[in-house]
Length: 431
Image (cartoon, rainbow, N blue to C red; front, side):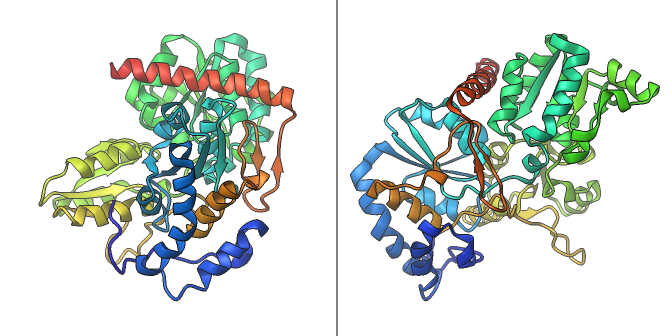
């Protein structure tokens, strides 16, 4: 991705009180800059990042996800970092064996997945611990555990958990305990096909929409799916509370879907596809969209799939994309350089622009990146930014709950098993 003269580096400045105490001096310097153009911001960042990068070399690895806003993906790439989807991010510690310090400008569950697969001597840091995911916020361990216990008591080892990447390490550990696996939007079909072949009842957490889409992809009809509620409602829901008809539906189901969802992807409607298709656009959507949207689109896939569509496009092509707004903005900017037109599917004239970026995911900006790297360089990175498996961070207050070492080791063992199973299945499917 290109940083061009006079482009705005950050869409919105965060208030000073949004920064942790150790980062406020860096934020004050940034907020005092006269503008947000590369001509001003990059020299300020260079003063901190270049000495650190020169000092550490390949021992320091910068990472970001495609969804990150505020141009942070362009900045991470500018300073030699890697941009990837959640599957590729999870593997970065393994793929970069020399990396001793891994700094992730993305969300906590992604950083935790990296830490789960990392060696003990590889330290993983997140630039903002409060950067989270609304879907995951309604699928915390304390939400899912009561339902898991209830279902496991009824079905025992005849049930396995499939955990979407957008879950904490503690939830991924439930998948590992039951012989299940983690999945991403890019490999969910292969993982579900593998799981169905085991002949067990599948508890799919947390995204009900991706769950329905994957059931459609793998031939599991709606009558063989059971919808569990999400969040606090899901935690309070119990098997013994079900009436006879619902209990029979649960027993007869092949897949039980946890009731969380991505607020960004639920705004998309089939009629939006018709609007852009009538104007000559090919319509591509993310599978966190409702199943009727995915069924109506010209194609569906992960962020890597959507970005690859941009890379494969030819001058004159027109693409309407249904996913997170920051991703579409970056795709649109890059597409314009090669004569390709990209639009956000929700941006329909006279309909109001409801295309948006994920606010909770995008709490990363230049001061967070600069502060994190500089404090590692100085040898005093804040412990709150160090990511350990099993950590639970409140996205509002920043309060962290960390497991005792023996509990952390157990969660790591089970979560790593679920992630490794995902890797093994995915790589076999690719070969």
